Structures are given as structure tokens and as C-alpha cells.
Length: 179
Image (cartoon, rainbow, N blue to C red):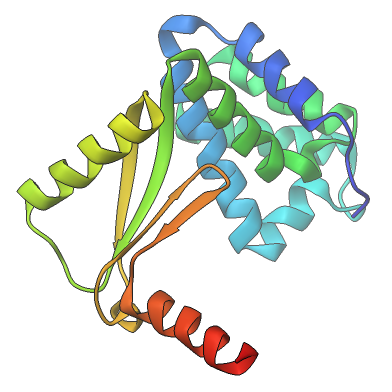
């Protein structure tokens, strides 16, 4: 698949074109379709590959719209991307849409990984700390990764905060190698 230019432009078109009342659900639907494209190569080839005709691709989008109860404008947007051969970039466009939406609402997305499941009070403390650091409301997503051994990693945008034992051992290893 060729690289599609203008991902942010397409994301802004989506934000402007979809009804504001249903924007959150439309973003979720587009994100779900994008995730399916990333995880299922057959699905991706149906929407973006050269094997199927444009009219067949539009029928698939219509079926998706009906099955997922997409708004008419969201379905029209997906058809537009298909028509201009940019639907292959839907995963990147979807991430850009989410970034713009979060920025509009003065929010940040944080991916927090711990070595073991933590209590609600601890997750609340972590979210509050991230909010103080960023000065924005936090939309947090938690995961457990036992390979961290202990501690926590936090990814906010392009910044990574690593206070895990695994991360600290990696730093120590680098210092020992450098001497």
C-alpha cells in the first residue's frame, strides 16, 4: 500500500464534518474499523486492496454502516476516503482524529502499565499526578505487564516516564557497559 499524505487534513475534515452531538461515538466507530484493519489483513484488503472494485468497497462500507449504526455523515466520510484511495491510511487518520479531539477538549491520553494489578485509589493517584504534570484532564488506559517486575511506566503523547524495575535495570546495564 502506498503512503497517504495529508492524514491530519483528513482528520480535521472528519471533525468538522461529523455532527458534534455524536462526535464521540463516531470517533469510537472509526477507531474500531481502523483497529480491525490493523489486526485483520483480509478486512484491510477488502477496504483498501486492488482486488475489489470501488462499488464492492462501497457496499462493504454500507454494510458496516448498517451493522455499526454509523451516522450518515460518518458513513459518507468513509466512502469519501475510499473514493480518493485514502482509506488505507484509516488507522493513522483515526489516531490523528483522536489527538485532535483530545486537544479540543484539553485532554491527554495516557497509557499506564504496571507489573501487577493496582487498586482504584492508586490508579486515581497516578491519574491525578499525570494531570498535574500535563495541566490537562487525563484519559487513562491501564494495562498489566508482569515483565516490568515492579513499578510503573506511563506514556503520554510522545513522552515516556519509566519507573519500572525493568527500566531501571536497563539504565544500570547501559551505565555498566559505558563504564
